Image (cartoon, rainbow, N blue to C red; front, side):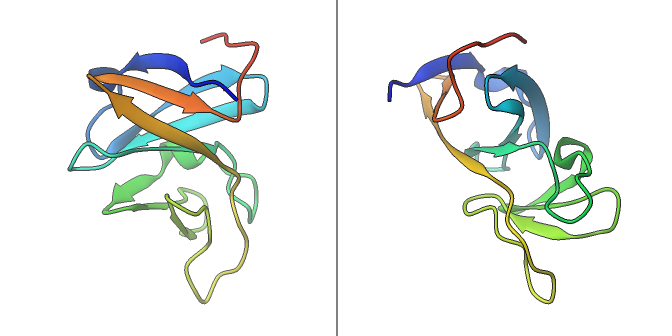
Length: 108
């Protein structure tokens, strides 16, 4: 699988998210305080809430619907909750955000 450039790092707010539409569905790109970027399917595993509208803290996001906490790196829910959000590989190269695994038909 090839990496695909999605946006500039600056297009994602620090401690926030940006949503893009790809072949896999709506993908939430999260940016941490230290400029790490993570890509998850924009659906909470609990009630399919929009994770992109959640609160980013460290390397976790809290779902805005029912306060479920998800690890951005693995997509796993933090105990006592259970479940997993689908994740995709993401990286930042020279200020460009790239992902793979969710690709093909990109339409922002």
